[in-house]
Image (cartoon, rainbow, N blue to C red):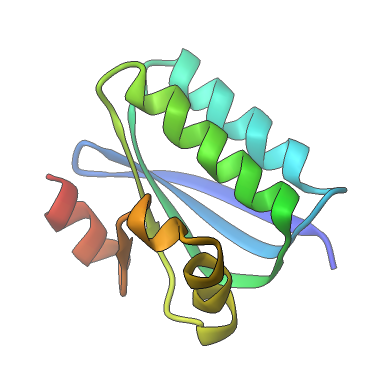
Length: 113
């Protein structure tokens, strides 16, 4: 399965809808998308992971890197995820303390706005 990325704006947030597998092969595409958005002045990102089927350590690294990138501009990066198998990865790695994780894009936009 490949990676799909769709970007849209909701309020003052940029939502990146991610689908498929985020792994060592596809993570660079997500990294490039985040870098391009930050370079374009989009510092408040919501990464919608509802359609992600697989996430490995490379994908986690891209998300952490994206968080550091937006924070350098006083920005934010929130995640949307309700899938237990993906949430478990964040819990095991302790990243639930690093990322705000929401149940829906609307919740993420409201919470970060």
